[in-house]
Amino acid sequence: MADDLERSLAVIRRFVATYHPAADTALLAGSRARGEGVAHSDYDIVLLYRALPDGAWRETVRFEGGIIEVFSHDLATLAYFCREVDRPSGKPVLPNLVAEGVPISSDPSALLDAARRIAGETLRLGPTPLDAEALRLARYTLTDLAAALPDRRGGGVRLAVGATLYIALADFALRAAGHWSASGKAVPRALAALDPALARRFETAFGHFFSTGETEAVRALVHAVLAPHGGPLRDGFRRTAPATWRLP
Image (cartoon, rainbow, N blue to C red; front, side, top):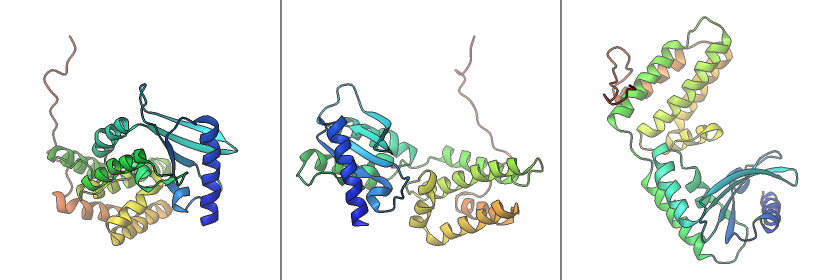
């Protein structure tokens, strides 16, 4: 594992030296920094600059046969994305990258220390809490998706509904509990951090649904997740648009 990390760091050192020598410091983050990367895993890196007058930027590039995802920030743009983008979204992509990233250099960096303080503060604050309207909308959406599971129009429709419901239900379980949410392959890990038993129930219920098409376990899981927050919601749900939402 240590050898894999050092090889990944060596790749990023060459990449930064070749294309971004002006960066104050760089971090290798994501699965490769955690020692969980495989041969085809991307390299997630954060470039920190003293100033980016034209703003933060992100790009995906190929280097030495691998894909590198680059997140470039100065302290001001980092603070903005952490507080105004990631906290409201509930998904701490950038603060996690900065907090968990491995520097490509062992040299002390005051800029990196400051960046990690911003990331750490964001993670400690947690996501912006869901308000009452957001909770009601989520309850309605999840109830509606669960009702659509036993669709008779074919396996493709059921798979689409099931996949959508898995992500939406996991996001609700995490956010309603005041925890950070996640995307893609990070969702099971986020659920396990919240409640290992709940994570296993998600895996069992949805695994059974995707392999057999049977919906009972998933629908029971939906009810269990919604129960502490008022339960399923469908009949009587109403949303009113602002009166100014009209065209002449």
